[in-house]
Length: 158
Ligand SMILES: [Zn+2]
View 1: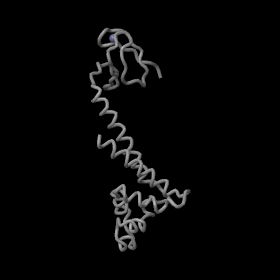
View 2: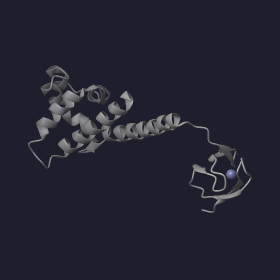
View 3: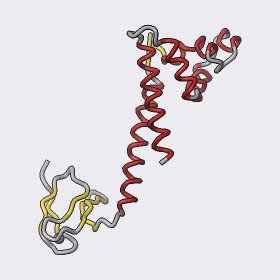
View 4: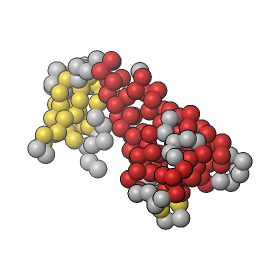
């Protein structure tokens, strides 16, 4: 991809900016700059974002990424159905639903909701049920879900 040629808003120096770069400092005067786009036109703006604003923006991006990952894991398929559907009797074992709820054919929506609302402690109990088999794909999947939820919770607390 060709570089974009733009002038520094502070000193007017011609800058050759790689298309992938968003924020940088002018090589002439050191002014922090941001590459902006509007209606197909690229231009430079002085970057006044504070360190705190930047940290918060990075955190939001990280959270959005983790939430997308978690969403993908929740829809993870085993035996051609979402994995949480295979856990309905395990949901009973850990007290997340009643036995009769698992016995009747339950809608996917309900089981998904149960899975989403499990506490981290309940998730750990599920992992313990499958952990005896080191090759268990269920245990590996549950651990990925738990790790993502823990990271999200940690970031949300900051
Ligand atoms: Zn400059």
